[in-house]
Structure formats: C-alpha cells, structure tokens
Image (tube, rainbow, N blue to C red):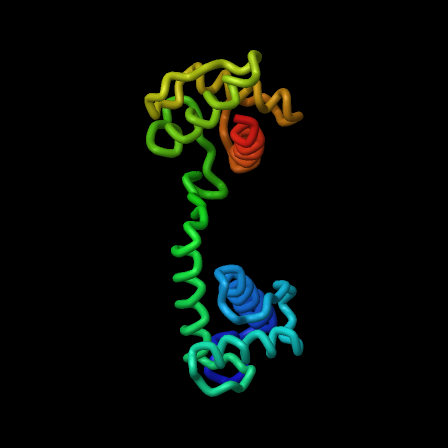
Length: 178
C-alpha cells in the first residue's frame, strides 16, 4: 500500500486492509467485475488482484495498491453498492457501553427495548407485556428480569449492555420465526 493511505499503527493498518477487503467483497456482490475477497486483514496477492480489478473497472492506473484516491473510490463504490442493494443498515440505540437503563428512565432506547420485549413476550408466555410508552416502568423491569433469569444473568431488572445484547439476540431469533 502506498504512503497516501491512513494507517499509523499495525492495528490500524490491519483494520484498513480488512475494511478494503470488506468493501471490495460488497462491490463484487453488487455485480461489479471485481473478484471477491475474504476479509482477513492480510494484503496478499488476492487482495492486490481485486484492487487491480477495481482500478481497471473505473479507469484509474492499475497498480494493485491502495492510495488515498483508490481508497476514496473504493469507499464510494461500496457506499453505492450498499444503497443499491438496499442492504439493511444497523442501528445503535443503546446509549453507551457503560450505561445502565433502569426504572424511571425514558426515551427512544427504552421504547426500542419495549418493542423487543413485546415481540419476545408474544412468543414466550412467561415474559410480561409492556406498554409502548418509552418509560422504563415496573412492567419493563419485570420483563427484563424474566429474560435475565431465563438467560442465566442476574435478574436485576436493569438493562446493561450484556442484558441488551441478550435481548437483541432473543428478539432477532423471535423475529426470524415470525
């Protein structure tokens, strides 16, 4: 990779390579004439060839190396591919990794928690239903506590990141069954 790329440490360098590989893979999946790459964080011959394919496909010098212009072009093509494929974008509603939602809290994060809890409650009779009001009240705490107990977590009724992730996994599994 040439000096115009951004990495400063080996960790960032590997992350940038993984990002490039992920972007090239998505570009390939969108139908572009760019070979697919497995994101492994290693800038080997296969990645170099995929970069060359990409450079050829957009008419820039075919070096197999990623300078700033190639990086920007790859990212723009990746961004277009994601939009054109209507790929699902993720959301991050949990306030912060060290945050704990508890009775008395309110807001969008609580509302999303309640939506997940109600989806789960619709499939599991032992989980309490919630009012969808964005307020972390007694019923929300009870439903959270029931899921915590069933999942082997301490049944505190409070939602920390570990509890949130557990609820998200159960919700995703329940949503697939709908």
